[in-house]
Length: 190
Image (cartoon, rainbow, N blue to C red; front, side, top):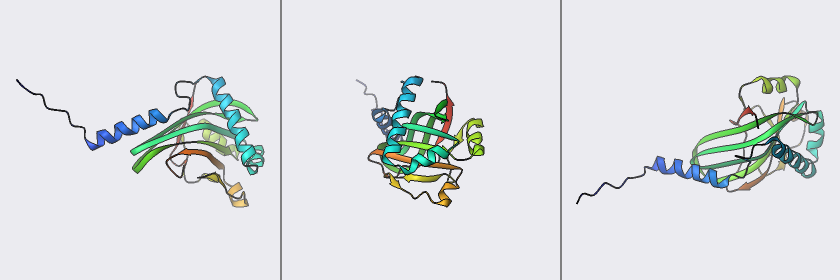
C-alpha cells in the first residue's frame, strides 16, 4: 500500500489565499453588479452623505471642474492587500464616464475595510489629464479635505490650490488609515 505525500501549503500561498478569501468575503461593492443605473444611484447617495455630513465639501464640489465618486471601495489583506471599487465621473452634475479603482499593497497588514471617496478636480488641466490617461494613479500630490476617520481638514488657501482634492470617509472595518496613494483609476463600460 503506497501513501501519497500530503501537499504542504507555503506561507506565501496561505497569505495569498487568505487575502483573496478576505477580499471576496468583504465585497459588497458592486462586483458583478455593474449596470450604470446601480452605480449612478450609489453615486447620488454617496454625494448626499458627503455633503450632509461634511458641509465644507459643498463649496468645493461647486468649484470643481469634475468630481469622481467612488461609493464603495473594499480593501482586504493578509500580508499582501488589494482593493477594488466602481464609480462615476460627473461634470456639471451629469455622469460622463464610469471608472474602476484598483489598489495593491505589500507589507504587514491584516484585515479588511470599506470606505467611500470623492476626487474633486479643481482645474481643467487636472480633469483633462485624468480623462485622457489610460490609467490614472493617485499620487502624493492629492490634497485631502477629509482623511482617515473622516476628520475635517480646514479648506485653507494651500489646500484649495491643489489641482486634485480628495475626501475619504465612511470607513468601516479593521484596517486603519485609508489612503488613495497608489490607487489606479481606469475607465470602464458598465
